[in-house]
Length: 137
Image (tube, one colour):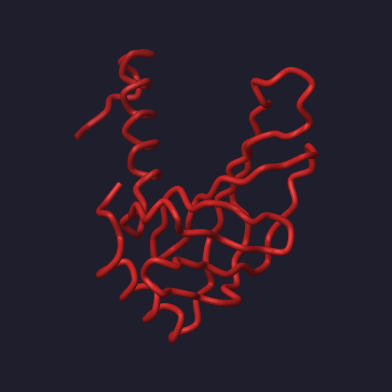
């Protein structure tokens, strides 16, 4: 695909869209998991929205606007007898939405984290996704 820099704004919009889609490609496929698959960290126990070999997004309740980072977490799925403990990670995204209930101090938040898996954790997670996920997102 060729873009002419002098052709005007319309082509620049197409070029920027092309660049954006190329940069947003994920390195790992994302998977849905059982609705009862949970994540536990010191500050944010929650429910996993989607997960990949590179990281995950999860929802949790928050009573403050502070966006705390996470350094490690554990994953738990009782139905499939899966527990992955002390996964090193870093927070790469936060979003907080206010409760629809009046006077509520609780907010729903979504946090995205990137994993730093040990070789044994990578094998465990790969097997879990292969045999117990609910398919690709």
